[in-house]
Amino acid sequence: SSQAQDGAVRGKTEKTEGSAHQGSFRRRDHDAAANPCRVHVQDLEDCQQTALLLLPPQLVQLEQEVGNRFAYTQGNCVLWTRGGARVTEIALIRDDDQLYSSDDGPFPQQLRETVTAGIEQVAANRRSPLAEQHFMWGWPRIGQLVGGDKVRRKLAEGWQTSQALASLLLLVNFWAFASPTETGTPAALQAYFWFTGLAMTFSMGSLVLTVLLSMHLNLLPRDEDIFWMLKEYGTWLFGWPTVLLVLALACTCGVFVVCAVLAYPALQPDVWIFLAMVSTCCAAGAGLFITMSRKCWSRINTTSITKIWPGDPWMQHSERKVRYVQQIVADSSRES
Image (tube, rainbow, N blue to C red):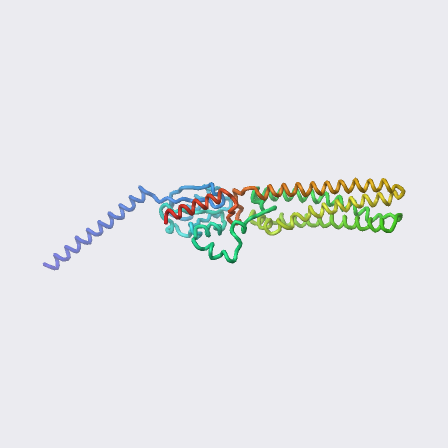
C-alpha cells in the first residue's frame, strides 16, 4: 500500500511538473507573439539608410528583407555584427541588436578598429594614420563621386576626343615627315626632322595608350572591377594620353615655325615675328592648361564623399561618416 501511495504521489508530481512546463512554454510563446524580437540594421554603403525590422524565423528572410529595403543590386545581402563578425545563424541575433549590412561587400576595417578597443594602437607602428591611409584623389575620387557607369562614360568620351586629335596630329606630322624639303640650312633641316619626328612619336603614343585603356576598361563587367582599375592605374596612367597630346601639339607648333624658315628664307624678320607669336600662344596655352587643371583637380579632390563604392575602405574624410562613427562609439560606451 505504501508503494502504491508513493507511485500515486510521483504521478501527481510528474503531472504537475508537466503541466507547469507546458504552461511556461505557452507563456513564452505568448510573450514572443506579444513582444516579437526586433533588430536595428544600418547600411554600410550609405550611412543615411537605417531600418528597424522584426526578426523573421530564418536568416535568409532577414537578408532578403534588408536587401529589398536598401535596394541592393548585387542580390547577396551580408549582415555583420558591431564587431565586424558575419552573421551566419538567426539564433545569434538577440532582441534590439545593432546589425550592419552590405551589398556583397566586406566590413569596413576602420569601423572595426573604431568599435574594437586597442586594435588601432596595435597596428599604429606599421601603418600610416587612418585619416591618410584611405584618401583617394584623381580619377578614383571621380569614381567615388559619380559611380561606375558615369565614370566609364566620362573616360570613354575623354579618350575618344584624345584619339581623334592624336590621329589628326599623327597624319599631319607623318605627311610632313615623309615629304622633306631639300632646301634650307642643315640646322633648319635638322630641326625640321626632330620636330616632326617627336610630334609623330608623341601623337602615336597618345593614340596607342588611349586605345589600350579603352579596350581594357570595356572588358571590366562590374563596378568593383572599374574601381579597382581606377585605384590601380587612375592616379598615374590615365593622365599620360593628355600629356603626350600636349607635347605633340607643342612639337607641331615647332614644325610650323621651321616650315616658315625653310619656305621663306629671305623673310628673316617676319619669321622671327611669327616665332614670337607661336611661342606666346604656346606659353599662354600651357599656363592656362596648368592653371585650369590645378583648380579643377583641387575642387574634385576636396569634394566630400557621401557614398562608398563596393569594396572601398571606410572614408574618414566624409563628415557624415565621422559623425556616424562617433555616434557608434558613444552608443557602445553607454551600453558598456
